Image (cartoon, rainbow, N blue to C red; front, side):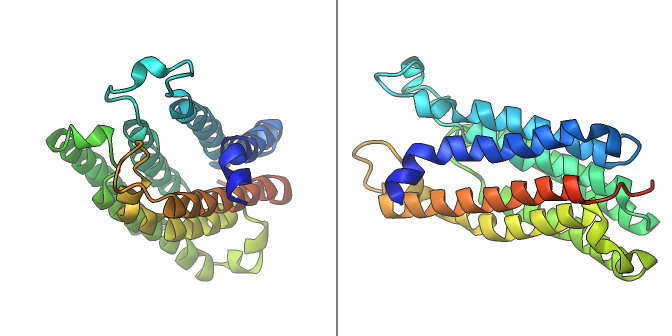
Length: 240
């Protein structure tokens, strides 16, 4: 299993992401007049960004990006933090601001989205060197809180409306469910990033944990993107 994941982690991740993005593009007309169209854009954005994030697999003495060895771009922490921990949270803040109906909930989501963005920029500037070689647990915690906030507000609105009778046909329900579960699973892993050090000879290099982390990320990603794919096909467009 470990050897299979090591050899196919990149391929399986890109395939599941691309499947969701391509499905969204093929069904774009179905969601053209709903907020879900923005989610389709987001899936394409994630697929492209994740594709480029795997450049680190080629930062090797015998591979094409060997010239990055020893530079701040040797690892992709800076890229993942930028497009995922910041970019994805800003998107979900925007998305839930669009789909939530309660004025108070929308205002709270908008406020926390802006607050998180400015805090992230300031925190990165103050920890500029660390930005290139590790993830920031504080950003992971705050992003998880924002996702929790957005999804809980959405679930509460569903329970308080007539949509509770047909929630299983709403794409926003599956989006909320999938990202809620994904963040609960993945967030704790950032606290153990020290064990993910991969330099040869690094005393903190723990391959048992590295493979465990790969397995968790892989299955969490497959679950999330297959849920998105299913939702795009199965669900009916929500009225704005």
